[in-house]
Image (cartoon, rainbow, N blue to C red; front, side):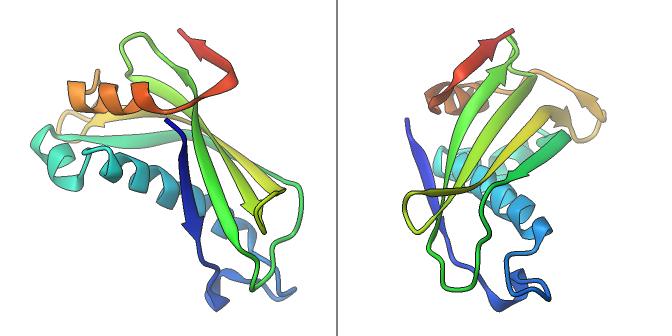
Length: 143
């Protein structure tokens, strides 16, 4: 399933050079990931009921083109890798401006953490199913 999210740039997203500040790219990526989970039934209530939440190990952004106020932003989300038990996974976000210009690529490595035990665990079936339906990158790896 293709997942694309539109994002609107706010004045507070800009830096003193009047383009998107670097940390806003990471905020947009987090927003896209959480929207994907919620849109696929993995809400905060589901995560609380299972005492589980996502945790980041690495987040890296490759900046290609500057984004300025007024640009139309879309983010696509793809699964880059997943462990066989789905405990750990990687995702790729491509951030486009004005429909077709790649402005940035964001990659994260993450896992599912039990919020009380504070350890990485296999997620419940609802999370596994949501990851399974997400489009995969061309270099997708199932470990």
